[in-house]
Image: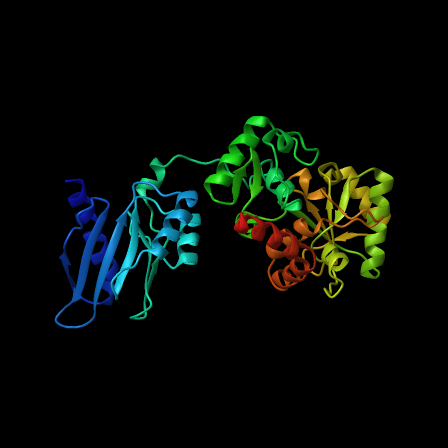
Length: 365
């Protein structure tokens, strides 16, 4: 009975998905196992046909997906048979892993990616509301301001193994043990990390970094000014005012990128300032001291409000401090124009080797 219900639901979805390609009829023969379904789709009156071997799963997490898809690659199927994972919910992370393994998938709402290389078939649908998603347990968000401190600390030391208590008490993190435990569970479940010898290690640090930037909104506020003078002179003037006023600061965006990758060129000075700098009296003091005029366009000085104090972690130690390569990469990648290109220069110079080494180590375990 259960297999028949899955079959009926899947048939409706596959007909809906293929309707844009023409008229098809279904010839179905359920497999003996209740978790598998065989479906043949034939176009009318005559044309291409597709056979699907459907693997039904009530729940599939990224942690499960990797082992499952690796097993699929070892299983032989007849020619021109497409294996499809069919589950109530396919999370973005599972969908990403399925693409890496070239596995097709369909969820209960009809969101899908169906690939048949032999016939040149590629169907991709996304963004369809899925009621089953609301019934799925909600994970803690590893990229929220406080939680991201944990991700940041691990990416700064990608080959290190961590006890959860070490993460929560780390001076760059400072979150509750409960939050650190929940983020650990998410990182393991999403297959970004693995527990070995009671320590938490990054497993896919590059993928974790890419997931972070996809949810990263950038600085929550910005003030734009025009100041007379060369860019580096403006940066020195702002840095001097911050130190005199005891304001925490860091050069940011392209200003930071130039310190990390000198091939990056820029003409706008950018700073993160701690929140107390943005009070009316403080800003007036800065404008007078540095000759800054607030403008809506044509700015050559941008002051950014940090989403969290962790943007200042691992600044360069020089007098004109710059955000860490990691924070610089995040900010550049979230910008339009030349931002992503500059981010790539910072990544190649400062991040790729360490992150790749951590991933290779886990791959060899």
